[in-house]
Image (cartoon, rainbow, N blue to C red):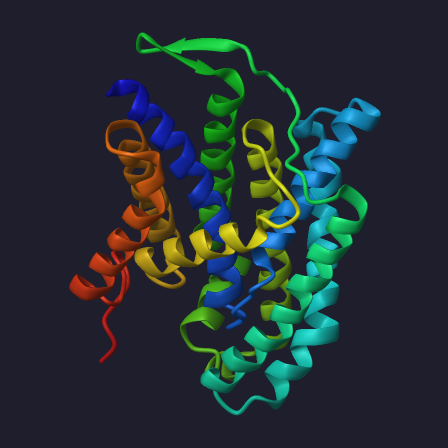
Length: 289
């Protein structure tokens, strides 16, 4: 039982980290990014190439991959999504347009990955040695993945809640129509939030690559998991994303360990539906008035 709980926390920490980036993109920029999971997979392949080809360990690879993902997502928003945001008269229109635009982007990124890496599963061995925690043996890379997820999540929380720029981001997320009245450039803030969300997606991709196998076609899986965590936790709520991610990881691990591994996906969606029925605004979201 203890082993299953620790494994579930590691998986849940990864889910939470992955979902935090989508929380920013959707909660601040109002972009429903269907290509989000493919950014994660692209970062996983980047870590794989740097580790196997150049001998750069994933921790150092983040110094390259995260800024590169930030810049890429900045360009994607400025070139493709910002024109959609400016022409959309309401949030519903923007969400619909962004779904269509990022759906095409999904296939572009996935196609490039398939051409370069093929459709097979990939992985590499990094800090795979055993470590004992509370009498339970785990792989060191899984423990490191959990620690990184917590550290990055804490860093994002401090940025949003303890800095002036974080206050600006939260103001845009709360009321984008009123933010310009106090001198906030909504377009610039949305672009930054989207790019920062892309960097967090890349961080999740590097973390995933350290202890899971992955392939060029797995992006949609991570997109769906991140979306489930965001909605369960409450759109735009970082604490909600953290709790929902940990809860999802624990449920999946418990079902796989004590019932049947084939039922993990069913358990995920049953949990998701239960939250939607009992608390439609999410675990930490506020009900609409």
